[in-house]
Image (cartoon, rainbow, N blue to C red; front, side, top):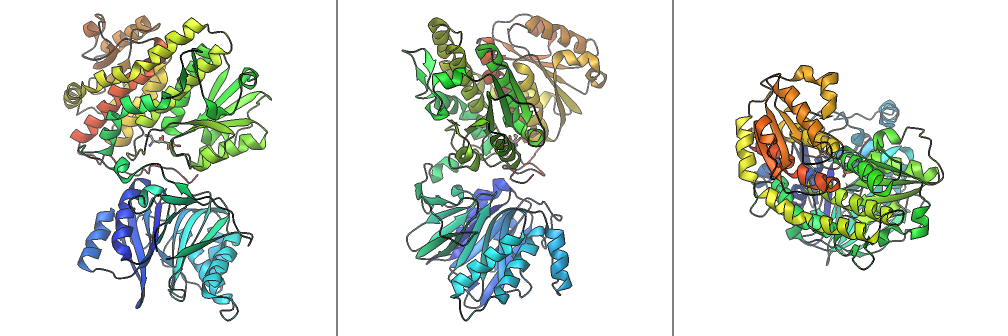
Length: 618
Ligand code: M6R
């Protein structure tokens, strides 16, 4: 949450910062700001609302300067106002700071600073950090320390006083030509260019300028100049680092001809599902090959139980995984929201394997749950998209999604990639336990046919658009499914509410009678996910119950089914597939349905209100 980009080099900083902010806007977009340092000193501009507001101001009054820091905000402490936007200054007004994270003890620190005469311009925790750094800088002897080292040491001293998380960048008028940064719990990447350097929350912000990157580790501090950088630690020693080549290009993160990233990402799914299984299937052994797990067949056989964890859409993928692992591998499996798991004292035996699922690999609750399970001695795996992420790095092994950047705040392609990987894992664990070669091959072939079937569903986008138009006045919506498609119902409801703001609920179809049915009315359509599977007949009866109460029904069913059209008002058909693969198909019409509702309601699809792409605060 919140995005940071800093630049120092031999060209004008402002256009680079604004472009970087646009690329980071998915991390938060309620306000933005920048600080530029030039011969005239520090100039700060910040504005409530979208980055376009800030850009428009800078167009009118351009800013010169070859170094700057900037920020796009998702509010945690203090409302959405110009004053609460970053950068924040210290008491002297000569130091500027941008921060991503949460300073948990800021109230106590603020009181202590206020007692010393500090006054604050905002309601944020981040401003307190700016004051702390400024105070430490002023207290250090400028005579005995080089200016750069004085600023690094001031940041170090300030950070030692805070509890919480940070990705932070700081500049000071008295130290031109230097930006210092640090990270703990919130990502920060150093970009290395020719005579220029970048500091950003995400490589996407600087990939147009350089593909050489150093991912800071928790506890790292960096002093960046145009022609070099120095990495140290919070403890004061030298920090080791590795220079990585970023594996995606500027073009991976553009919308192209699509009106929204979300639509582009929905349409990418035939490729991304294929990429999630590419090189991971051995036909000769009739087995998935998941080398990244770092576990041999003997170790995998010793696993007695699996706990899957994640948040939001990743948790829904985990719920599908629960059904998959239980039925394909006969392994007891549980899913727990990471925000609950981290504080729960769940009894977990020695042979419990924990799998964290996260597109970004930076979700604070998922990371905390992973760390808690590691503290208890469990082996942890990750299913991540972001290869350089903290969760990816800290887990004992895992499987990368290779889905390319997902920019739309509503997760789409990451869900199907996660489910594809969980399917591979289920088949693998099943094969080393009880599945025969023939069964393994049949399952893998069925999985390999999924991308083509997804394409056939995407071809129905216009039909789904027309269904959205028909129900556009819905007061609320129900999403109902059973077994493998109960989690898909939850996911369909999440998509609908997060981008269209229509109240939506996802439930197991049979739960209707236990209370939910009270909400059914002609203004509340129900979406039944009812492919031709083992529970089709049961779903059909639940549909009849809704129809009997004058509730409109939209059904997701299997091509060739004749019964659905007799009960449902509208049917969207998916190609036939085995039960265990159906979530990979049934979710696609639900993503499109939410998209078309939101588009027709004029919602800001890629940047829904109150949300941010990566939830890096608790
Ligand atoms: O990056 P992660 O997969 O860890 O993110 C988890 C959730 O924050 C995310 O799936 C969120 O629920 C999406 N906005 C849903 O569309």
